[in-house]
Length: 200
Ligand code: SF4
Image 1 (cartoon, rainbow, N blue to C red):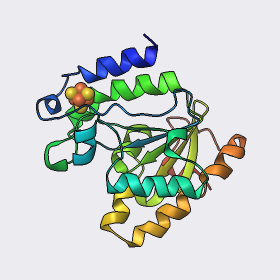
Image 2 (image 1 turned 180 degrees about the horizontal axis):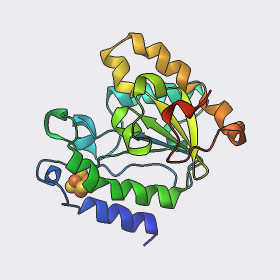
Image 3 (image 1 turned 135 degrees about the horizontal axis):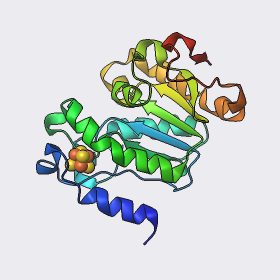
Image 4 (image 1 turned 120 degrees about the vertical axis):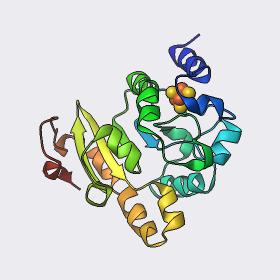
């Protein structure tokens, strides 16, 4: 069994927080094991919980549209969430749930070793860049331990707030340039302040 298969199997059996009691299926994530880009959303919704796959509802369709705008298909990137089981009624994840689940995403990152991690939404942003607000951080990149961190609004935000659609589309278009000019993205140390982000 490959390291990935073993990890999926462990995640599927996880009961480390209360969401294990209400989920239909665990949603570990999917994509190539050597993907250059890892997209990290918040948590599974109803559709994802039913199918055991990330981003398969309306927000997922918009994400696929966004990927298409930069010449990518969803099977060319890795897609995951910070929380692997659906919070009831799609409520916000609790701090204890985020803490309990973080180990799985960390292990996925360790195996994939992506060149870029795209955080989708504030919960994902907070996991990688605590202290940054989405309003200021979206569309900006920083590098941490050699990996580019790029912040975007969650695609679902465009479904609830049409005015964000163009912003999300414009931010997505920055990704190819960031990958080709990765060496220009500034490495930010933990002690650096949020305003020292490299702006793209
Ligand atoms: S949300 Fe994460 S920590 Fe909680 S049961 Fe599911 S996999 Fe385990």
